[in-house]
Amino acid sequence: MKHKMKQYHLITENLSSRIAESYRVLRTNLQFSSLDKSLQTIVLTSTAPAEGKSTTGANLSIAFAQTGSKVLLIDADLRRPSLHKVFKISNQIGLTNLLLQSVAADLALREVGVPNLRVVTSGPIPPNPSEVLGSRRMHELLATLAKSFDYIILDTPPVLAVADSTILASMVDGVLLVVSVAEVSTDKAKKAKAQLEGVKANLLGVVLNGVEHAAEDDYYYYYYRARAGRQA
Image 1 (cartoon, rainbow, N blue to C red):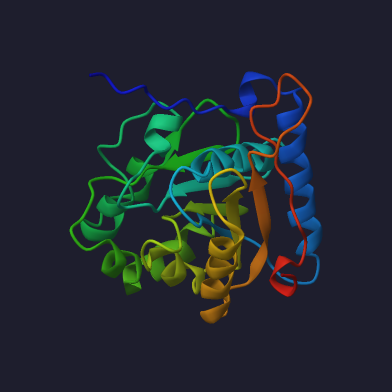
Image 2: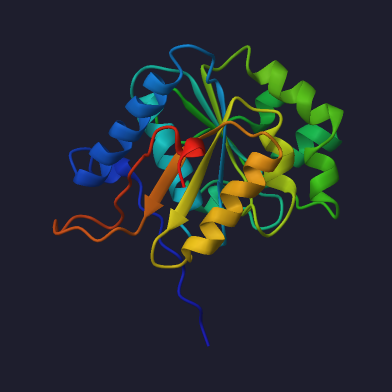
């Protein structure tokens, strides 16, 4: 029995769609939320798998790149990576090669046909993802890459599943939580929020995914709630 291949919808397919506009609104809200402090590195996580986290990360990165900003999107999900599938590129050399083999960064920074955007895939999956992501080398790599990019967005595993996202949350300027209204209960969403707050993550907001909308071209609809960390 063949499994249906998951489809990833990028806003480059239709830049005038309501979905594309939703990402531009999300981008603008994030920019305004960081007027008083730096917001260069952002972790994207979710409560559970299949909530649209990777699609959100890809499209948000494209939206930032469209402003002329230099953007790097990193697949830091070293358990179930997907960005190489999203952009249809090789995953032979990626983040784990940079961290474990001291491979030159230029070999892992991939062009994906979007001006100003580069992507680093996960690379080979290691046996100890949490230790790899929490290493001093990861801190050093982010600091080095931050010298060359205006924004660095990290796609990470679901926060309730493993510790990887909370580990990375302590290294970045802010965290976005993706929640599928059709897949995740309110209790689980609150638990994920509490877990991030427990490590003093700067929770920038919540992206609600799968909200029904009347427009025919809406596959997803996204909403950004500013100051989510202060709301229920």
